[in-house]
Length: 435
Ligand SMILES: *Cc1c(COP(=O)(O)O)cnc(C)c1O
Image (tube, rainbow, N blue to C red; front, side, top):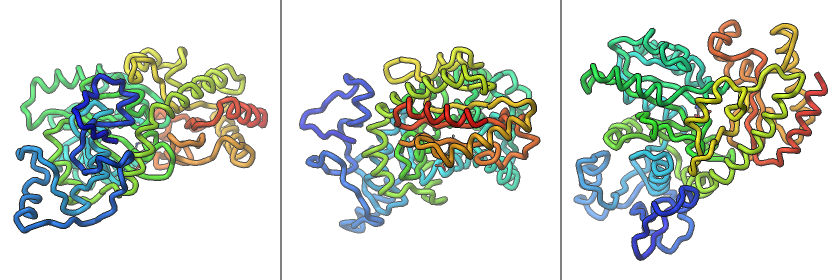
């Protein structure tokens, strides 16, 4: 939210916790100097005073060459006040030069990959991915003659096993959905820097990180040298489970091309959702994340010592495989370790079948009896959501291939909400007693 003061205020003197409420001190996206909250703009088209102003608007659109002046709005799909203000604030909080918003997270992911690749190019992706990203890369990209190599990027050496002259993009999530494996941002950036030394600008490799699980409160990959961050604003940033949205954040020189791509492919964030995320989601991100992290930590510790639980993946647990890497790169605005609001755990069983069956019983008990946990996909909600990736979000992956993608068939994903953590523990205890 902009804060139009008479005198220029230097927002950088204030903490990001405070800046996230006010946003950039000055915005030229709308003259709303007397509104405390930005008004909802809901206009698909904009009056142009003259043909000349109309022409100027089209010249200015997606044209960074032209010195930035107050925008000339033309049509919602090209840009309008609510989205533009949200974009300014998203770029600011992710420490990027620019942001472009999209209708959904998948809109943002398909757009950045659409901008960075063409037929004949190759993408290297981590082998554990959000279900629809997996589907995009494996069901659709072969039709466009874009080859995707999936490897385990938690070991950066694997990169070199599938690297070719045609590799254009390294794509991953960290923490990865659903098992929360952590990829070392700096190690990837260093490796790609070395490779790019041997390549000209046209053939250089770009790194893209899906930062949805961490949110910018817990991790800002651009600070480690990653080229682009993508988000599903539907999750932790939106925060209330009411609106879908997505965003790309990255270098300014790509803004024009991304805007043109969005204009022509059309995955535009609707103005009311942009307004809700700008007004409710982003300003409360720190407040919500702090609470969710502290609850997640408590719940992770509880599950970690529970006799019926085989393993708990939570970046904040010292016995988690990727704890040391997580500590290096997951930090809140003030530099405190911020391991996020998601947990993945596996119930015990004498065989994988039994473990899966225990998972099924446990989840159905929760669906029928728990007050604080809802059997539902999605995350970063006011309510704690629980789901079974193997049969739900990751059902695009064949059952016998799940382990190749790092996903235990009996694993449960828990996305912590805003409840009192003791109440979640009470419901978990009850459900664990049933198996
Ligand atoms: C939800 C999600 C997406 C897709 O976002 P939508 O807004 O649902 O399109 C992508 N990546 C991750 C990690 C997600 O959780």
